[in-house]
Amino acid sequence: MIRRALSLLASCFVVAACTSSTSSSGADAGRVSADQACADLAHARCHALETCAPPRIQIAYGDEAICETRVKEECVAAQAAPSTGATPAATEACAGAFASWACSDLLDDTHTPAACAQVTGALASGAACAFSGQCPSGFCAIAPAAACGTCAAVPKAGDSCADLAGCGPGMTCTVDTQTCQPYLAQGGACSKGLPCGAGLSCVGADSATGKTGTCQAAVAMQGAACDPTQKTGPGCDRDRGLVCNVTSKQCEPMVVAGGGQPCGLVGGQITVCGSSGVCTGATATTPGTCTAAAADGATCSTPGLRGCETPARCVGTGATGTCEMPGPSACH
Image (cartoon, rainbow, N blue to C red):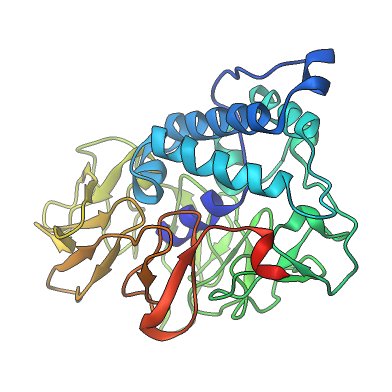
């Protein structure tokens, strides 16, 4: 779930409904500057995520204000990228389309409003890119520890994502099979390699035997009964800030910890790290410690011992990577 949230939030033009927008419309949208359009997009996107799934904002950014700052910065860089199809008018139109995008579709990045469809650019296939909007396919294939990638075909379900930072709209890179997979609807046959959509739990799956489970509605009420193993019943809806306590077997408020604080299994329930922090040293029975994300330009670790502030990437190998914001300068 955490990986899925970060993957969604790192995509520059993933925006959604659940809120009103402050964007311009009509003739005004055609005259808006890149700075203003990106500010409007960042506000609409971050406020929508805060409304639909507050934990995703906390885990990736810390709070809504930081989200808006970081999203705007990435958006402005995307507007300035060579041969991009991104324009201020298109960005402003997307910001104004939020009212047609439901929370469940936002969180799974599906049923995208037409105004927010992925733009395409004029770079040649195979050319160096920093943003998908530069490519004729609408997809820039970037390796996890790379500053830039190459224009390539959009991955299909089942394609390997072992060497990709993301799979594109509507899909996630699964942890176990390292393949791109779409999110399943309620009633779908699920497993670690076949993930359920937002608000659902995969009940009855067994990795040891290969048995698939069934996507069922996650428990969405504090104090309600839940199954922390999801063997016979659903867990809790983390997008509503709930986790299943392994002792009480009830849904309790999620704890989002800061740098230096305990994480993992704490007090009978999972505690996650906020602001793109990484939980290090945790086991199945003992807590670990949150390592705060590195700032832009600071040293990070590609094995996942210290990450970067979203949407910056850890560029490099081993423990000597550097946090870099997405941008075209590293591709030339």
